[in-house]
Image (cartoon, rainbow, N blue to C red; front, side):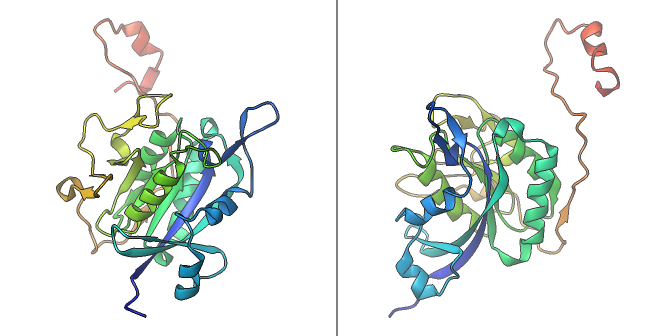
Length: 261
């Protein structure tokens, strides 16, 4: 047997969303608990039993080899109970996600958060401001089509997110979707009926996948190894977005009261 490829460990936090939904008897997509991880185990691209024996991974871990980066990635999936429709994501859930990452920070090389697409950009933006002195990647992703359907964008988004979460030189919160890695607080959902539904209008993408993986390192935040990780969990819910437009009146400003700067 030749030299073994480098093994990286990633924690996947499955909060809910379309990526793991199934259709009920009425044909409506709904969250279904305790089936998502078994689906991943059955996907050859996302789990290789032969590698599991070679690397002696634990029973609750999945493992996959990514030839493009010559790495083997062992990962654990932790499913939230209850699973959330992303419309119900609130600052309370963002704090739970952040604390879960903080509690497991020293055990893994990176983290993937699976989130519904409706609030995915809000989750990634919130997490980006909650973590200070981040030394490891946190990649937020999801899918427009459930992993149980064929075709689906789920497998590609999960596999690529695992790859980027295993790269230590990306020490920030990112979003991966449709072959693009983007800064977490610069992402917007621009479409509801396309798998290429997220974009970063005001900041260049950090990396892209396809025939080759290209990482634009000059756009990625520098790593600060000398400072300890800090996680801010005291969040205010008194936050809103006011788009400026020419006819903005004092009356409209007044509805926001003291929140107008």
